Image (cartoon, rainbow, N blue to C red; front, side, top):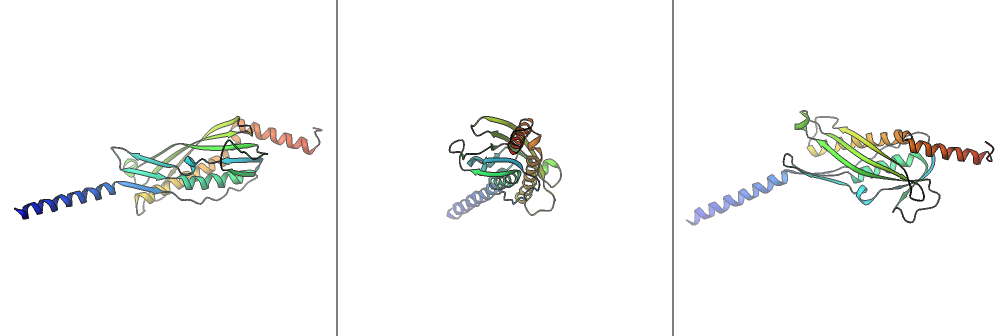
Length: 218
């Protein structure tokens, strides 16, 4: 009898151990790191403050759906590096702000504040090929020195795993996110002056600078 109970106890422990392993195997953690090259071009003649909130710099997307495994995806460090690099190359001077809207340094033309609106991804079994696809959407806000809204626009980025031959799902998804972030950086850089309000703001700034240089004789 004791042997039977011992056997049942051992089987129960084995079942619990197997369940714990299965639950662990179904949870995926992805931490995205990335170094991004600075774009090359003529900077806009603006002094811009950049505020990246803690929510932005530490952003983690968590998903736990019935039809998928659990995913926890941290993109904060990578997107912080991306936005600091790209915005830092776009203007004559860029100042990273520790807080907003209080204690702003004098002389700022604009303050830019990005927010993550949405992150979505598809699994290989959903795309029917061994790649991940990722979409990231950012809400962009630009304010003047007084805190008044100058412009709001949206950046939508897309990326997919560049190769089907990777060791893990986590590595494949991280690569897809890095591609999406590069796409976001390119869109931010090339699309900034296409925003009508920003185009008008830059034109006015350049006109005022030109008049100052010529003594207001235009």
